[in-house]
Length: 283
Image (tube, rainbow, N blue to C red; front, side, top):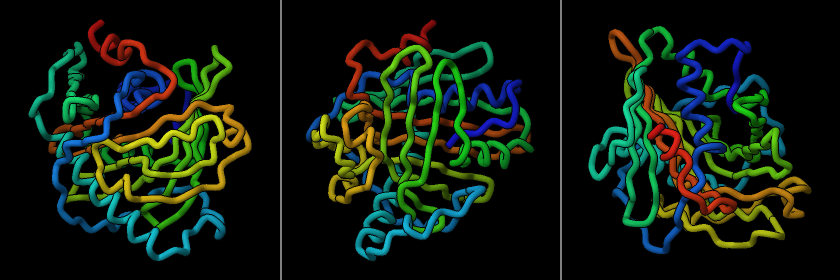
């Protein structure tokens, strides 16, 4: 999903990609539990389009009205939660403040689920639209920090709400990781945009991993049930599954800068080691 136009990244691109790479590189210790402690969401209207350079195939469009309705409800909740965690300081522990102004926080949601937050300011307010476009590109693979990130649309619910498959393959290891998640982009206010991902009860027919993953942040994700015609390597259990409780960005244009906050809560079924994101931020 995450595209870069050239190999020489400016500082603000590097900051953004640092947040993006949390998905695949820095988040390795997520604890799923059976009893979430959700922040009660309210309804929100979604009316913005995800940006794509290619139109999706007709076969990807969901034709089940009930599934579409539930997908919209789920992502309504996800947008509310993303905004809440991006702006809340409640129970968040400050991990580090870097020389470039990046602040990193961690929270144990409900006593069982890690949520990580990174906040930064991009000093040029004119970069607002470019940041959003960068984060919404679903087309081009990228080689970043020793790994290859690829993404594709698996299903289309509305012009702005899709199911995506994202993969990460390390250049130094043979194993690959992946997740399925619903994704949307919403302009929640003037010059304020949310981009958010959330996994649900999606049967991808991975024969090696039939575990039920409970979303411990978004309650409605657990009642959202569907299946997807996944790739052969996923069906054969050749890739390791990840599960997105909540991941996304709150981007707000101010007079002299762009506020940029990344929220990440992702369960990695492979790693049970000390959270390497936390170790990285403390260095």
